Amino acid sequence: MAGAPQTGTDQVIARLMRDAPPVRRLRPPFLRACLWLAAFAAVSTAGIMLFADMAVFHHRMVTFEMQIELFGTLATGLLAVIAAFELSMPDRSHRWALLPFPALAVWLAGSGAGCYRSWLVSRDGMWALGDTWHCFGFVMGFGLPISLALLWALRAARPVSPFPVALMGGVGAAALAAFLLQFFHPFDVTFMDLSVHALAVLVLVCAVTWRGRPALG
Amino acid sequence: MTSARQEAREQDRRDQDRHWAELMRAAQDGDTAAYGELLRDLLPVLRILTRRQGIRPDHVEDVVQDVLLTIHRVRHTYDPARPLLPWVAAITYRRAIDLSRKRGRVAKWEESGSDRYETYSDPDANKGLDAREHGDWLAQAVASLPPKQREALRLVKLREMSIAEAATVSGQTPGAVKVNVHRAIAALRALMARDG
Image (cartoon, rainbow over all chains, first blue to last red; front, side, top):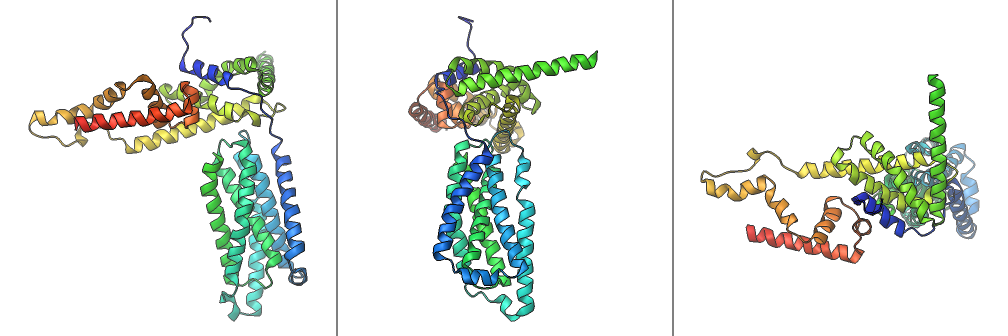
């Protein structure tokens, strides 16, 4: 080979070899997702224990629709976070992005059923805005730091295809923020509430996908 | 007979993948010789995978170089317990799509066909337009740049590499790449102003 002319690709390989220090292998994505979720659970549990009105929460949780909604919200958050970590690896199928959708359907069904039940009880109150913008602020205020923490953890994989990773990260952060909201939401959901919750989740998902994509890439 | 041959070929492929996985494991641990052997071994495979994505022959080497840079950037994500080829194939597929999109974006703004330019009845008035129409002017202007500026401009502006990637491919420092791109654009702007 000595003296043979080098092509541009040969030169690239030679340069990459010169700049190839040992690297620490990334742990499996499912394990990293579990570690991240465990940290989230620890911080959230402490916050709920310190600041949430658990008596009101237990009072609201007696209805089946609320329990379904709570389960759906949490499951969507957990599954979207797991999907985001899996998708951050180059060789994982894009079908991982479908993982949170069944839980998302349960969440929407639970929210819709709760809203319908409130409508049956008090039709006039369904259009009241009341404190509903506080919910918007809550989802955004908690969703953004959760998103940043999640993007920071996902960035370690330097995703080759950042769009689905950012999208799943946005869905996961928004769902987890909506789950936390249930502990600080002392009134039943009206139609306007539901609309504002959905708007907050959508805004957060779009913001995280839009800003997260270049940050991950 | 055929199935025995297929079985043997399949076995060869598995052995080859195991060997590559071992080389990548060594590369992750800092063995540069193993890393070089792996990247050189992968080149024919990368070229085949790239061509299968419908990339034009004159762009195949660009994609292959992009894939090598990406493999280098994400080599810590490879799990030696898994086969290497699907990992490499997924990266190649992604980079080929990226290149196709970039070319598509560029092509969207390009014009071709001499009838798209306005011409004048006086043949002398068309000289400047004709030169540009044939692409001569820009090609000559870029060719007149010093080699390092030309290479930096090609990598950063035409191949849309990051400064770090362009530095790796060209062998220049990141700072030099930035300066050379800036100087190349300033020189082209000055030439454009001079030639009207």
